[in-house]
Amino acid sequence: MAALLGTLNAIERVGNKLPHPFWLFTIMAGIVVVLSVVLSALGAFAVSPADGERIEVRSLLSAEGLQTIVGDAIDNFATFPPLALIIAVMLGVSVAERAGLLNAMLRGSVTRVPRSWLTFTLALTGITGSVASDAAYVVLIPLGALVFKAAGRSPILGLVVAFASISAGYDASLLITPIDAILAGLTTSAAHLVDPDYVVTPLANYYFSAASAVFLAAVVTFVAEFVLSRRTAGMEIDGEGAGDLGDMKLQPAERRGLRNAGLVLLAAVAVIAAVLIPSGSPFRGEDGTVLSSPIITGVAYVLGILFLLTGAVYGRTVGTIPTMKDIPPAMVTGVRDLAPVIVLFFAASQFLAYFRWTGLGEVMAIRGADVLGSIGVHPIALFLGFLAVVALMNLLITSGSAMWTLIGPIFVPMFMLLGISPETTQALYRIADSTTNVISPMSPYFVMALGFLQRYRKDAGIGTLMSLTLPMSVTMLVTWTLFFLAWWALGIPLGPGVPVR
Image 1 (cartoon, rainbow, N blue to C red):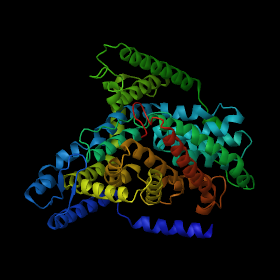
Image 2 (image 1 turned 120 degrees about the horizontal axis):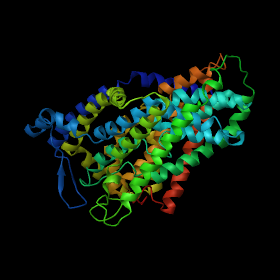
Image 3 (image 1 turned 60 degrees about the horizontal axis):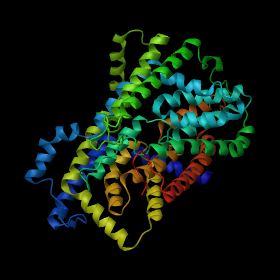
Image 4 (image 1 turned 90 degrees about the horizontal axis):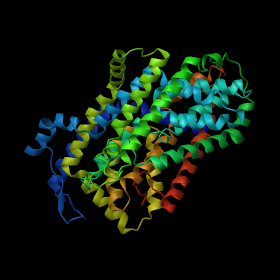
């Protein structure tokens, strides 16, 4: 443990010296400028395997390149794929959050569960809780401790189960979440380096993500019951805890609000199904299939509407959003909360635009694919190597969208040229991006979880929390990887109309 803590402390020191992601992307954009000038002067090129076209690296300090840097800066930002998607989703999610719907859903999921199902239900709620973003950590970590305490079990164990589920299972969910829209947009942009017409939808990994949520909940339950329960049994509770469970239980008005919101959701789903079923429906795609329908291709907008409707109904029922005029201010709050993301996206959009215009992404992808193809690397070896790289990077760069923006334009097209679809690469990314969050000293939620832990055990430190989360992290990384390999071997679709191979 001493060696592990020393390594993590070193990671923390290195990570603290990294610039803010905004400046990180700015620096990377500068590096792209320099590389474009040098490689263009050297005549670097690659031959497209699709049409035999010669692709040369173009200098950003040429007349055309300066147009991209200065003249196209606004267009680069405005057309950045995840920007409109995440805003559209968050307009609805913010209403549901402001109304208290997401909070009530998290609390209602675990406060009335039989003792025998408590661990699994808490884990599944935490994994799916990423739909509530930061609220999942704030609500579910102390709630996990309280419901375990009320059940006569260690509150520390409940706290760890909640934290590990939310953090290490962040990219798996039973629901479509805002992160699905962000990843889809970034993966689409990266895939365009090889195929300008390729589109990755927010539903691209849904089957795998939903199945992973149930699988990981079972893994968390196993580790908690057969490993961590023994570890926490000997931990003395010498703190005051985090309040009373009565404060966390749903009130009658909240239960009515959840019922009404659920009925509205069912009605909306029924309407969607009704307009998609007729073969001549205008809501079907041009080829007459459901998969190409505007409802599927515009699922981010549909998701935002569903959150808005259910949030408004819940808020009207409990009184948090009493009138229609209160909905726009709630939507404004969601956009305001996105300000840090929008700032980051501005720098990221310029970096990606430079990377795409210079041809560096295509040349690197083609050359890399040629090398890997010539030595006959098996796909499983590629998968494992990619997972290792992302898992290690995630210890330092805890923002999933920032890291995918950096490495997606390299790995997605490279793997495409090796016959691995963008959706498959994205599914792999979900695994590594999630499982090491729970042990990263750079994660602000690790510090938050430590603060909650110290309410029950005053002398708890980083080592205490690490000893409880490391078994979760390692087990989830290994088992989720094996789960993916089995999924890939069986050829199960990753999402609607998305084959894994």
